[in-house]
Length: 302
Image (cartoon, rainbow, N blue to C red; front, top):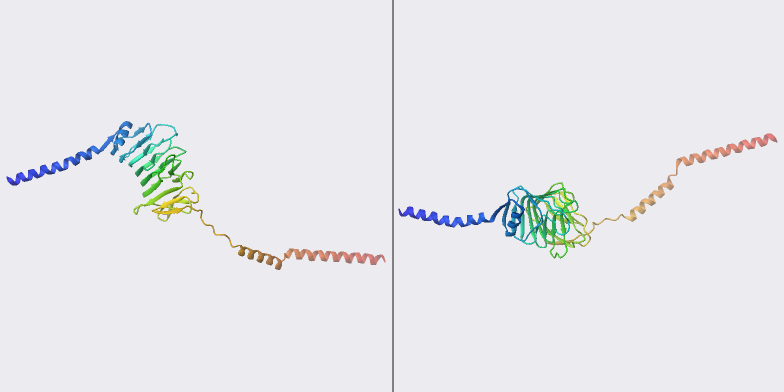
């Protein structure tokens, strides 16, 4: 009997230890089905899961540490306009992690890391955004790419430093960028004087600086190159600061060209045109024959 009571007491103790943690986990996962529910849940932080596709009627800004699990569903922008911030979802501070979600039809960008805000993209697809703007805006914040697919945007990831932004735009590669997006990497050269790029050891693709362009590679294969950076643009690659510079062009050797020209001139002197010699001989013979004919006529008259 004593052993039985000890066993029962042990089970009760375990239950009291486990139940509180189970309740916390359940309370932290919020399932949302409408735009209003989504905004409220993001403002609380924690873990948010979509129950269905949601139409976004106005841009969303979050300043919390929050994970938004799309569960394969999409956020579709239904608002219009390009003045100011018209990005579907922006991290102003804290870390916004997007997982298994699609962002479509934004009049500007799909997602933004703003002035110190952090965004993690893990199995994210961004399609059909504005013809003038990109899929991802790194506006003085940091974006970590684990798995990102982009298509049918004006360009892909943009480095920028907007008005009143003091942070340095940074991109961390921890996976790969996929899709048929033209210009996957773009730098606003009018705004950006310095940017950071970092590669994790396990990242499938790597990002670096080559001469005056940002280069994304997959092993030996070049996946994408950025637009041309002005000379002197500072790029911190894995903690090492470098400066963009035009590629060095090896000048031609003027002495070699001079020698070649001289050799050609000598060849021309040593090898006169054969056809010119033949014409000269024919002309000489014709003049001689004409002279003989004239001489015979004069003798006949005499």
